[in-house]
Length: 234
Image (cartoon, rainbow, N blue to C red):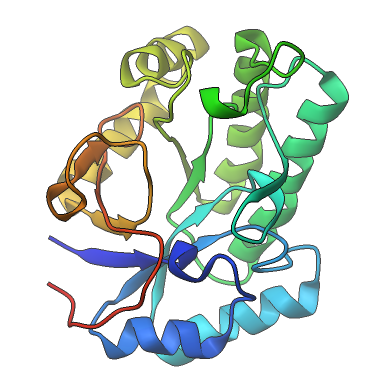
């Protein structure tokens, strides 16, 4: 089993080389980068070049890139982004931000793009909601953006009615992208990748928290979102 660390650990700060150096120093060989502009400004070509250089210099493989889900993060979500917004302008903005973040894949190989299928229930209001029709359209657009770059798209299980494992599996069937889904399932089973990344979406003690996080049954191991690395990779 291969373990990696998500830069969610440093999400409230601007990503720096010493963050990646810390990950590598603890024996991890792979990383997930969270694409939030306050963390990594993916609209800045120089910042993307710099991040790609850091990964190479530290000998880290960029296993996954987490698509943007907010404009900024300072300990709380600032201006959430949703690919399932029924407001087409908001939906297009979220897809456009994902496309901008994918520019990192032109500089360094990325295996997986992790995408939130809309907003979690805690962010919904009577005027802010998720639309399955908008979600389907966005997934097709994002797959079309990622595929030429050799990047698989993984839909993350989050707390909303369209983002349960069962709902996402049905979505893949409806979109008729079974070959893409099968490829990701096969890759997951072969690599048996487990990812250390914070979340509150799983109902188990954090020290034994293992959850399904994509529609095609990938697994992650979840740790708290604050603190620092204090021991070697498993």
